[in-house]
Amino acid sequence: MGLKGVEVSRVVDQFFSDVPEPIAFGGLESSDPLSFKVYQPDRLVLGKRMEDHLRIAVCLWHSFNWPGSDVFGTGTFDRPWLASGVEPMAAARTKLDAAFEFIAKLGVPYFCFHDRDVAPEGRTFAETRANLESVVGQIEAHMARTGAKLLWGTANLFSHPRYAAGAATNPDPAVFAYAAAQVKLMLDATQRLGGQNYTLWGGREGYETLLNTDLSREEAQFARFLTLVAEHKHKIGFRGTLLIEPKPQEPTKHQYDYDCAAVHGFLVRHGLEGEYRVNIEANHATLAGHSFHHEVAYAVANGIFGSIDANRGDYQNGWDTDQFPNSVDELALALYEIVRAGGFTTGGFNFDAKLRRQSLARADLFHGHIGGIDTLARALLVAAGMIEQGAIERFREQRYAGWSEGLGASILAGDVSLEGLEALVGDGGIEPRPVSGRQELLENLVNQAIWAADRPAPKQNSGG
Ligand code: XLS
Ligand code: NI
Ligand code: NI
Image 1: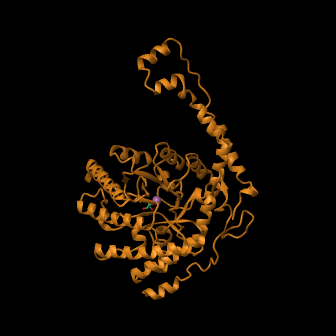
Image 2: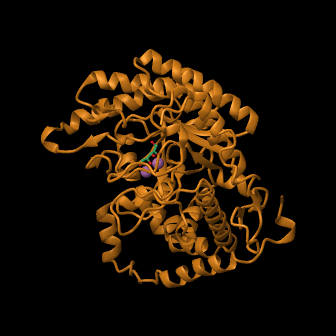
Image 3: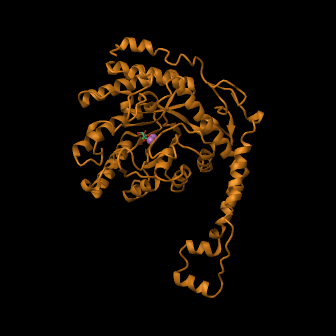
């Protein structure tokens, strides 16, 4: 195509001109597809603004740095800055213009990006670093102009051929060093931009075949890498949270950060459990054979819950389809765990979701996000309803009540031995009586909360 930089910036001056106004709340009665049906940033839910509960972010990779290609075909999307022949730094600038126009029109508070989404790799590391530094200055200006904030930054340690055999877990220490240098730069950039978290997704930290893989070496390397990152965080005084994003496979056959439990075990083995939390992606839970609800509940229960990559998979496909979420039923259960645990601290809902390859219209990016945001908002109302109603929580508490007193408390305190328990049971002093788990009743309560959330917002609770 060979567009020159100047021409490209003119093309994207008002890239989303089909969507002239910021997206507003229209309510369920509105027939305008470019309006929110449920999401009202100022609406109070359990005493907190919807926007502050959900902390929504737009991701720059799928939405602005992916051309709509798949393994069988080239890009289908209208993304002029990705055309071949465009000068890379001019392309980066116009891409950012379009991205921040989108974020501002969508009206969400946060965004997330990889170093390579915004700044091209140069011929040398020094050139790459200079590219990133210059682009970070432009991001700062966009943030000041629009008020958008950085939820998290991350380094792309998987696209370049040097990372084919992994980054931290590469058999070549030179690749480890290169990855470390890249993360150092991006962690610095994240801090400079006031990022709330820094994420590491180990896309190629795993293996293709065990025949050429030394598992124990790779684990030690990975632990060393994550320790270096945590040390640098403290050295520069970065106050955000370090996050690890579990995913079981894809692109490699097996990835070490398989799921929340595998990550947690790894962190504990290496004394890093106080340094990292997890960024849980819905579709990655599906790929690991778990429900999203399970992954969130596991992270909350083990004190490592951090942030969410919102999307959904396809239950018939075994890959990361990254579709926009649209199931209130599924998200309500995850939100129930998050809200009852006190909600996000530094985390939020990042839309790590991509359009389908045939969704060619520029406005489709709005439709994907609007639908996902409304689904989250409705799921939040359902979760709040479940919490306010309280029956599920009461049942769970009462189910374990025996552990807070008498026999249960003395077992947990270590006051009774196996022999002691045998004596107690043998004396006939203990006779367990099975009780109902009440699953159907509890599932009905969830459905009732889903149906009840259809009621319009009470007047005193609705804001602008
Ligand atoms: C890929 C991951 C990736 C991370 C960021 O499957 O979800 O997009 O979120 O590197
Ligand atoms: Ni992700
Ligand atoms: Ni993913």
